[in-house]
Length: 308
Image (cartoon, rainbow, N blue to C red):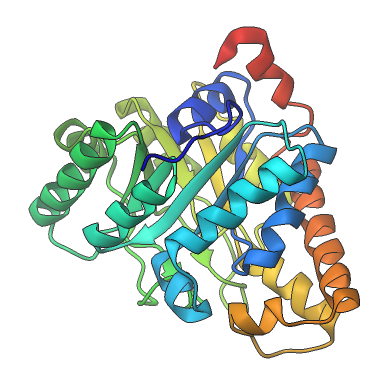
C-alpha cells in the first residue's frame, strides 16, 4: 500500500531547485537513531528551514534499523509534532537496488545509488537502472562520481579519494538521468583528525558549468563555515545539498557521557531524561548548522512563494 505523504514532504529535486535559486544549501542530517529524528525535525521547524532527514544503507545495518521502521518514525513525528517546513526523506549511500526498492515502498522521497567504486560504464548502468525505477515511483535520485574519502567507516567502505572529472560528470548525468550528483572535491566522511578539509572550488565550478543537476557535498562535518558558504555561493550555482552525520552523533554521545556508539534498540531503551538530553544536544547542533553552516534558516518561506 502506498504511503500517504503530507504536503510538506517533498522530493530532493523539489528541495534543491529552491535551494539553488535562493543561494543556500539544504542540510541533509543523519540522526542515525530513530529517537533522534524528532530532534532534527524540531530544529528545522524552529529555524523555519527546509531540511533533509537521511540514513544510509550501512547505518541501517550498523544501528539495526529497517527502512520501514525509519520511515514510520519519520512520518509519525511529522504528524505528532506538527512539522510544517519542507522535508525530504532520503536514503543515503546505497549499493543495493533491493534496499532502494524497500525504501521507496516505505515512503522515502529520495534515494542515493552509490556505484562510484565501479568503472565508469558500470557506474552509469547501475545508476541509470536506479534512476529509472525511482522516477517511475515519483522519487528523486542522487548518484556519485569520483570517490569521497573517509575517516568514519560507518558511512563508506574505503579511505580512498578520486576527484570528480567535470567532463565525465557531464557525460554521467546525460547517460543516467539522475537528479543530483555527489562530487569529490576535497571533503571526507567523518571527523577530520589528520587531513585538513579543503574544497577545490575551480573543479566545483567547472562541474556546475557542465551539468544541469544539483551538486552534493558529502562530509560536511568538520568543514569550516566560511569554506562551506563559498561552495554554495559560487556564481551560477554551487553546492545545493550538504551531508552532516558524524557531528550529530558526537553531540548525542557527548550529552550521554559516553564514547561508544549504541544500537538503535539501546538508544530507544534509554531512560526519558537521557533521551531528552540527547535530543536537545542533537537539536542544538542541527540549529547551529542550519543558521551558520548552510544558511537555510527562514528559507522555508521560499516554498510558500511558489518557488518550488
